[in-house]
Length: 635
Ligand code: AMP
Image 1: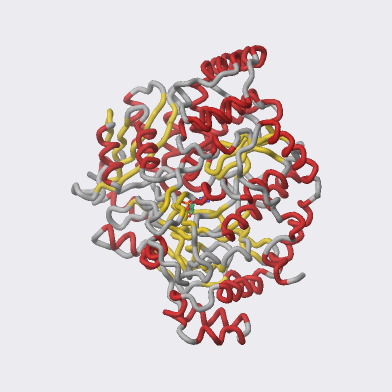
Image 2: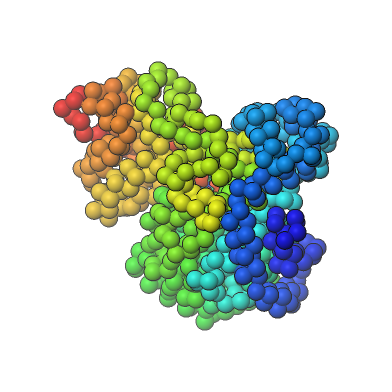
């Protein structure tokens, strides 16, 4: 294999057709799709799986070569010079093991805050080689919902190429188990954010926005043999409500061809299908008359593109109306297979903070398999799901050793007592020296560190993962949680995952009534003494107060962290508080984030927050409060 082939799958299946992005008519698009259908029959699956097996078998060496390549590509940039100095010149003559040890001994671990000043200079127009040799022309806005504010991350052609590679690799594994008809459609609930320019003229948008606008996105449709239902104008409108309406409308129109339903994160599918519950009558009316609601969709280019696809279709409208009436009677159970009977599966990120939407997604999907999508971040893709049949609760992500250079900081939970929240967050785990991919151990937890082709060096990602095994020589990871998302009042440390399990227990009690949990978040109140956890719930349906009281108690008892249990027993942490918020509160929070630059495609509701704006929204919308009666004898 030549050097380039090791790093990217071979050109036979990765070279995109270099097409212009000019607007096309419906006929031109149909012709293009036909041509792409023919071109797609090249059997890329086996080649890409073979490529992956090769790099996975040799993961340790592939990683060292990846590091060498990154350092050669970005040799002499300001950031590296600062740490490596003149020794950078010697790298060329060193073997890859020596490069790895020089790099990890001289370049320190970094956080986003450490590189922010460098990225700001790039954003302001400094095109000197600061982080990368090739000038950076695009910046991605990571969703920021996890840390409170969006951050800029460099985006290059490498970013969209690796996105294409991982999508094709995952599609190859999926199609072995769930083959789809070539030339079919995908009902994709995808959304671009608005792009804007920085002072220095760089284009800023979320990573998914850049990807949806790239040649690679078009090439993916071709090589994975599936075409999105909506034209690009719908994806890029920047108004998620209008886009959702059009995705639904076009999804219903192309109902027979839809092979699977997907989104980046599961939230978007749940959001869209719950919008369908309110919009179906208007959608059917539009299908009947071949029109597009002027109140639901106002954006001109999107209207034009969608109207081109519409013509009056009374028989389809009646069919859909009948289907939706039946679905309404059954509380929208199995919406996906009933409206899209040829769909083979539902595909999205279902892990981490998305687990909260699994129950609802299962409800909408009926018997259809839910397939977990891959693990990555704005900074870099990390791991691919090689087993589409594994349930979301058990899915593992197999690290792709050519995408970035990965390190893993070993983490152990601490039992030290701290007096401030800041100390707690900083010392949530005891850390050991970062390990390369070849030295991680099954059953251990780690924080992921990335060195990327896009100019990030030893940057902590803030995600906690657990190694569950190896595929050939490359580790397979379970996503555990975001490291900083942690509830802590005293000596307790409850992670996002703990909270998820607790809320599941609480909502099992809730399901005894006719109500269901729509969404949730939490906050550690350390202002009052003793401090206590607050969990905010939005509920759909009627529920008696006594049931909610029981939910609250059940959640309090379900936090199993030793520090929490001890503190609750001696009342140094007060009773857990359940606050029920008005219907629509979590949509208000979504709107707040979207207004501040987040994109629907990458939206993740923070499961634990200290953000004052959010807390004000939540508190203003609180309609009921309950205090746990657990550990009563202790207080
Ligand atoms: P962003 O860069 O804002 O899109 O967010 C990236 C973050 O989303 C990662 O660091 C993870 O915390 C989370 N994430 C991405 N993919 C997954 C996945 N498959 N499972 C769980 N969490 C994920």
